[in-house]
Image 1 (cartoon, one colour):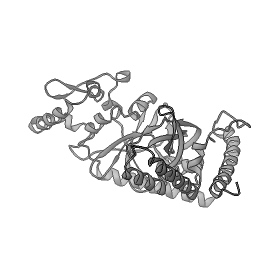
Image 2: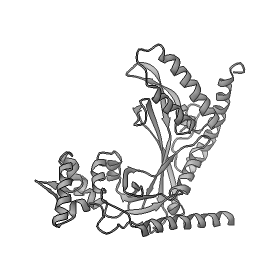
Image 3: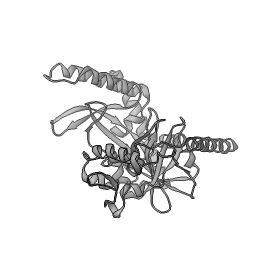
Image 4: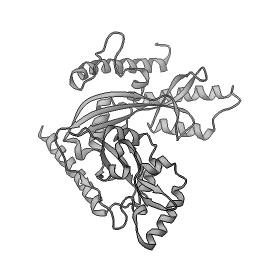
Length: 359
């Protein structure tokens, strides 16, 4: 170890983090429900890929630089290689802390390959009815950008899972943080997939922190500028509405029938609001009747809904993203809603700061 500088740096930090994780698991077993106590054979949430994102930025950069250099050397022996643009993009992500690099065995190729490891921490907040707080999309200033997911953030270098989840509550869900009680956490590891950003295989290590509302809270109800509510492209009557519906129906004709049914739209020559069965005879239109505006630390406002677990999972899978995009195409949030959501965030931060100073 003393003769190999890079290995020494990695081994020392890995040993330190592994020990911290072991001690944390002993406490977390009693506090938030990790069932498996650490043993001399296995420690929960202590696999190498799980610990890599928690290492310091310098160590992550060192690992990334070494693996990228090895990848460049390997490329010289291949007839096919990735573009320089892909490699530069991956290098930029590593430098910016958006991912960490590791090695994994590809069963299809029968060899060890370079993989991106992305470690988001998500919060699954459940209310008294068992419904899950789900982010539907974000307001860009001009439109609703649909992206259905659980609220969360990527783990930064040097952060442990507990620090990351507290940062999510403080920066993204401050409005609810005083009413949320963490109950357990689980790790959801995806198989290596090709990311939209790069051709390199990507492994997602999603740590899902389950939580419950200690008491009910009134969130800011989303309201819309006149004539721009969700689905208004489908509903507007009269000549102007018919014109919009005609334009819209041409685009909808390219959508799968099950997707059209999911948003409650029936197409028979022209677009019209109808009914289509999805889970429990519900439609997305009915499911998304109650939307709430929540601001984050940057002042950005996202739309949230309370969904039952089955619908939450279905929407998060992305199968209805296109339909949701059409549904929100003409929707514009009222400015008063944006101001109120940001004010609620500032209030929550002020209350939290006062309580912290009091302690």
